[in-house]
Image (tube, rainbow, N blue to C red; front, side, top):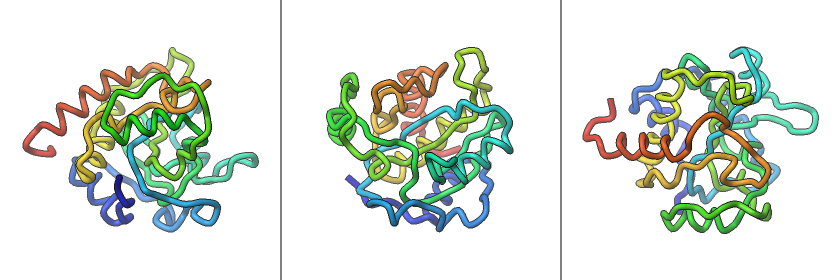
Length: 201
């Protein structure tokens, strides 16, 4: 269990992990905090955007859409490996998910299959949306995969979490398939190796 880090510490953690970061507008104060609690935080949730084109993707994740107001995540990771910060605080990214999965993340265990949607994930997870059509054919460039690894490791490092605090949307909410084309087990192995390294870069 952890209190959310400050926006300043969030940005610093990403920089310290060697990431290229772009700050979009007043991202530090762009959130959904008036619509529900933010924290305690327990992990990092990875998504794909089901979009193409960096500018369009960033704009959508910052502003949202009629049925789902933005921000839709904390950071957008584009194909070139840049992290674009679009919001901070409670964001509309996780939705309702499985409380058994949340308990497993808190206990630092492998999560069970998700089979219910009863628990507010927007409260408990940092979220990264990753630019990809999500059709199983759109490639995941090495630069993007490395940025996902570094971003997840940065937050785990700050909070003292293991790689088991990093999950995909498909492991949290029944019916979701994202991040399609990314093996979450392989991603967690990469995060574990990075966390074990003595230097961040």
